[in-house]
Length: 374
Image (cartoon, rainbow, N blue to C red):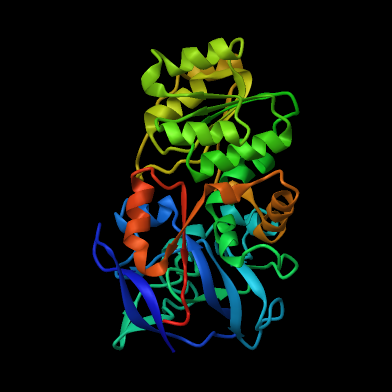
C-alpha cells in the first residue's frame, strides 16, 4: 500500500513528505491509520544525528489512530480499535518481566534501530529501496504506521476525547508526568523544582499538582512558558536571565532547597543546578537527553554528606498500557489538562511545526492527517 510519510534523507535535513510503500502487517504487527502524531524533541535529536539512527528514515513516535489491519497472531486489538502508539520493547528481558519496559535491555535496538530487530528488515520502501522505519516501533510521521501488539494501547472507552490529541501521551507527556508520579513520587505538601517548561516539564508541573506538592517552581527562559506553568499549577516561575543565581533564588524561596527536582532541558549545566537546589535527602530526576557523551559534574561529598540522589528516567518508567489510560482519566477529571499544551498543524506543514517548536513558539505540535488526500 502507498502512504505519505515525512522522510529524513540526510543529517540535519528537512522532513520531506514523500510517497512510500508500506508492508502488510506481519503475524505480531498492527497496521494503524494515523489520526495525529506529536512532534517530540527526540525526533529532532535523531534528525540531527545527536542520537544516531540509520538514514533515510521516517521518524515520529507519538502517534494515535485506528487499527486498519492486524497480523494473524495479534489478539489484543482488532480492526476499528482506537489506539495510542508508545515505545517498543522486547517483552522478554529481566526489566520487561519486572514491569519496567522503558529500561528494556534492547531499548535502542527496538526504538532507534530503524529496522525490525528480529530480522533487520523495514516495513517501508521507496521505489523498491528500503527506507528505515519502526522508529520507536511505529515511525508515525506518515498516514499509516506499522506497530506491534506490544506498543499499541487501546483507548476505545475514551470516544469523547479527540483521538489525535492522545498521541503525545505515548512519549513526551508520559515522560514528564511519569517522572513525577512513578519515580519521584513526591509526598503531599512537598516541594519540587522543574527545569524547563516545554511539554515534558509542563506535564511534570501538572503531575506535581496532582500529587499535592505545595511548592512547585518552574524554571524557563521563555515568558510564555513560565506563564503557562503558573496557569497549570506552578506556584512560582523563574527566568534564569532575570536572577543573579538560579540555585540561590530557589533555595531562598523554599527555605533551604527543594525535596525534588526534575531536569528536562538536556543542558549539562542545568542538570548540575537541578542537583544543587536539593535540600538534604532530596532527589533529582534527569529526563532531558543531551547528545551522547555529554557529562555533568557533581561534588561527590556534597551528594554523600547530604544524602542526595540522582536518578535517570526514561519514558517516565511507565507501563504504557496502564499509565496512558490513567492520564486520560485525570484529563477527563480536569486534573491534567494537557490539551492546553497543544497546537495543531496539517501534516503537510510539518516543517512549520518543527520550526515553531524549536523557536519555543509552540509547546507541543500535533500533526493531523488528512486521509482524504492520502
